Each structure stands twice: as structure tokens, then as C-alpha cells.
Length: 126
Image (cartoon, rainbow, N blue to C red):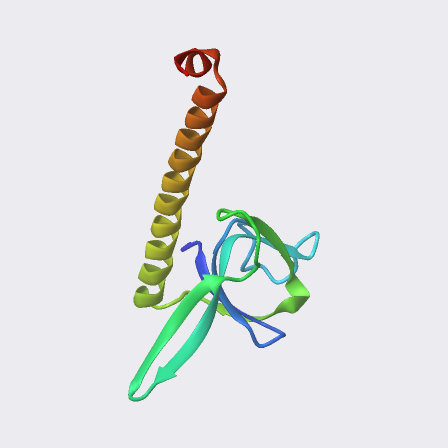
């Protein structure tokens, strides 16, 4: 089973995500929820004669690799997305992971610099 699914919600929103529960295609789950990872909203963008889809985090201010539970009753339909959409989703995930790594390295460098300036050895230099 391909774990990347495109889901249409009762709100009209469409998301693409990785489905973690093995029973996603079973009509009734025991707890009536689906467990998904890194849900991205899909937005259709029309610019002149061009038509494309934009992906962005569905839930603001969550961890990039967030795990989310959604109620089964909120799902209208689901399918396996097109290869192009799966590719876009995969690229988004890889890009986010790369930015996360860069941000973590920057934070680590800043902390090292701050520790240096707070250290006694810096104080003895001046």
C-alpha cells in the first residue's frame, strides 16, 4: 500500500500526507481516527494560462514531521495522488529537512559563540 494519500475533508480542504495507520482503507476503525504525518494543504493556483498546485503546512506552528490524528468522519474521499503530486510532496519534505538541519547548525554555532563570550577565557583576553 502506498502510504502517501490525498484526502478531501468535509471542509472542502484537500491535503496530502503520509498515512501511518495500516487500517486507513478499512471503513470503520476501532477509535474512529486516522493517524497521518506531515499533512500539507493543497491549493490550486491559476495564473493566466498556467495552473499549478501549491503545498503548504496544513496546521500552522507544528513540528515539521508532525503526527496528527484526524476523525474518520471528517474524511469525504481519499486516493493515491498523481506521481507529480507525490514528487512535489517528497521534494517539500526533503527541503524542509534540509532547512531544519541548517537551522539546527546555526543555532548550535550561536550557542557556542555565546558560551565563548560568557567564558572566563574571553574575559581574560580583554
